[in-house]
Amino acid sequence: MLKEKLKNYHIILASGSPRRQTFFKGLGVDFEIRLKPIKEEYPNRLTHFEISDYLAQLKSLPFKDELKDNDILITSDTIVWHNNSALGKPRNKDEAFSILKSLSNNTHEVITSVCFTNKNYNKTLHNITKVTFKELTDDEIWYYINTFKPFDKAGAYGIQEWIGEIGVTKIEGSYFNVMGLPVHLVYKTLNDIVDAL
Image 1 (cartoon, one colour):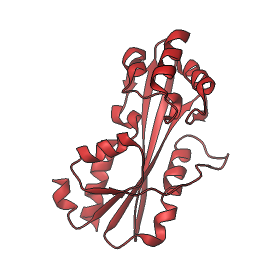
Image 2 (tube, helix red, strand yellow):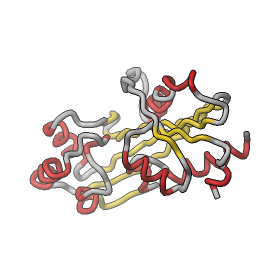
Image 3 (cartoon, helix red, strand yellow):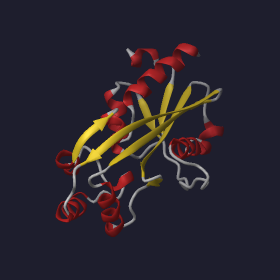
């Protein structure tokens, strides 16, 4: 289906995330992984989805001059929004503990933005999922951090891992969005792009 539609296009996924790469394989489309280092910094005035939108767009900039006519570049960024601030990836165990302690017995939002770019087209979309955790004990939090080392994950957790299985009591929105990619939105947008071009 989508693979047939995209046969004349070259999909570039600019993400080192194994979860995002798995999702793209699941969509059944051929794609190339191409990575460029970038400083993930954003202006302080930005809030909520403005942050992930900005970072997803920022990640596309280093590719701008090398895209060919049939290339479609996909960049994305995920943040956890809680208590009016963005929670990024923890730098160490103590920071991971502090983040998870703040999420315990609370509801937060996971926001993933996806930017689609080709030579004549640039579109950024985002998806928001609300996630509620039970009250996590300190022992549960430390066990998770020491066993799963969630230092590559916004909000210091992966919902598909042990902490999600034992701790998440409610989800409003896309589960896959919490894992790092709103797959339904990517599928729809790729279809829309090809139909419009």
